[in-house]
Image (cartoon, rainbow, N blue to C red; front, side, top):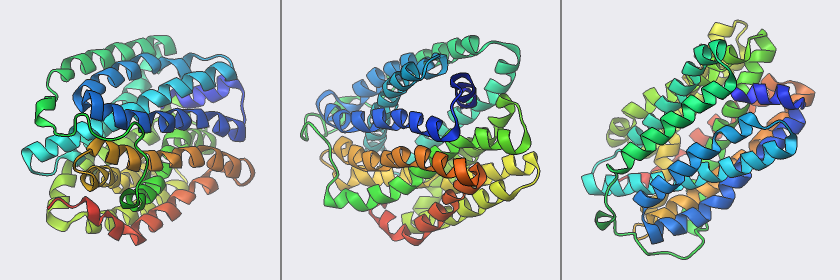
Length: 355
């Protein structure tokens, strides 16, 4: 996250061109997801999580080290493919674990993702203030590889997951997954917009240093983590529809406050409120995709996530183009609209309820 404004400055790109360059991240993810869904069926979610985790760790530094736009785009394509494939593998493993323990757990797993995002973004503030970007990247890659290697031995064995070997080679959306995928499109468009543009928005509006501007996303990720750690209990008590409806409203309120604030501290805190709102929506929808296809959860997850990540394709250049002419704060106001759409269409999430 804190390397994004550094990359824009290093490559000397305006908002519109930088937004178009960021398309490569989503393009790589979307291209990899259908294939990953099929490979989960053939190799198993545990093995695929290990493989894609190593790939993710090794491709992470590429975009942050690129000195030319062509290299930046290619590095984003590779990193995006790793992100997308790992998303499918991890969520398929998560669904298998939910089935095995017979209770909701997906929000907890996504909460750990948010804790990692929050910790990484927050730790980058002192790291980049005292060390070079290369030292920061080397530390992140070393830690990531260590965590992937250690955690792989704790994943659910494939003999306890019935999906092995099922499904075609490409995991494309079906009628059953299009509704969830459409909602996921809006959710990930909002998440991607905050990831790609929040630091730049804070830097421009309040004249912050790059590592300070990254605190907005750190708070956003922290809000997501807090919501997700409570999400499984909330889903069990109130159901998926109610949880998604109120989550969309909180997202809209939080983003409105973040963009309207006249002080950087208020804006950063409001980003945390927005994260609190959006936190549980993606876990509910991803899990619902897997439950719609119980014999091939990897295929179901891939279908919903592929549609969702299309939001990353539309989001960055669209926000950049609008921001170029109307200002980045105005462009990010689309997230407020997205939150209201999610709330209004919350009934689509009913498919995610565990019987």
